[in-house]
Image (cartoon, rainbow over all chains, first blue to last red; front, side):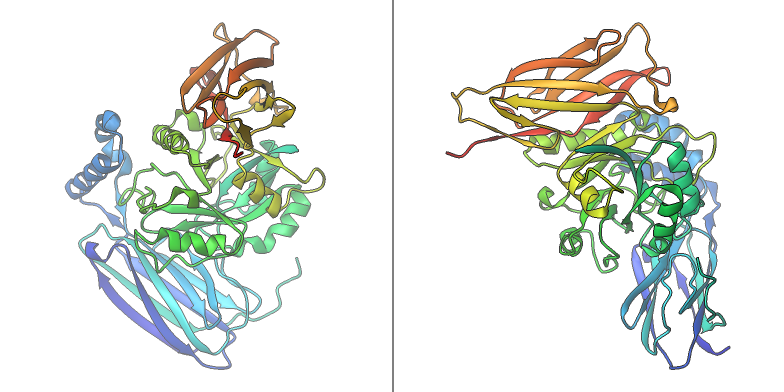
Length: 160
Length: 336
């Protein structure tokens, strides 16, 4: 189980709407990639901060005639969440993405079997890209870790 | 022309949906749908199972994707993945071209949903320089769409764009992530498909949407025909009218075709059903449908008309509401 990449970073609200791309060389002879990705905290639990941000969004996005109704029920949107998603490009192009909400994810990519969101196919040697799309950071700080190892799956899937 | 009900906005575990494609298509069959568009967030990997699921459930599955970006969510239909990660808020046309060049179409999803940080990127914030590039808009979003606040401004924006002369199609989309027995009813997007037999295919679905052959409904389907002289036109067609002063007399026939699905029967009370004919000149007329009546005729002159559409109004879940609406018939002066 070779380690191929281990990185970590710290984000702030100013990191919202950015992409962080890691490019790495995947050597020959790898049958599967195992990607582990986590970030935290997931939620903004401070009620005062939360209320202020939700009210701001309601004033920005809701028809003025309905704003008061929404403002009264601001708690419906509490707690706000950080959202980071992962996508992968192999040397031939887009290889899939995992647009989902849990802040601890593990993905497998291999020739015959891949985690939902990703395409199966050979793990070609060459430069791969792994992109963290920072959709939104609502907490003052958010730390992430991304770890890519040689994986273990490469058997024929049972025929459908 | 064959009219079939579709659901055009769906998710599976390939993004953040919780039902598998098979589970969703089984449920789609129960709901009386003929097909769905699979529009997972930022990937098309879920299509790997599509042929097998279609064979087992009889539900057509059209490839799509929901571009889930920081500045808006855009549905694409009929094409594989196209790149979105390098686009800023003023670059949407560059992204749309990538879809169009491959023969696909694009639609704005839930344009007036709450945006970040409540729902990241859910509110449409891209600068649209040319609305001719937008093929369709999801003006009815989620279940019981005519009763949702964020759909009213979407419907208004669509109407305003039609008034400006753009021919943009309007659809419904449930944004289907999970299924349970307690779900409210979603709308149908009835599509007018040119292939009369066999399973609806991607090309015919894309073609029906881009041509505006669409009726959006909580149950019944509205059929509309315009006659001018010897010519007949339906939903989505462009009626060629004479230059001003020429004979612009037209006859419109509207029919209400009830849904065969048991959950989609209309509630009727003393108010009954109302057919409203509207246009760029505002509301033209309205008819109360008498019991057992399912057809009306309307004679009009085409002068000044850019578009006309029909709305069905009546009781839905105990409140008066729009039950269905057609996409427009358009009008254009003939060039001599």
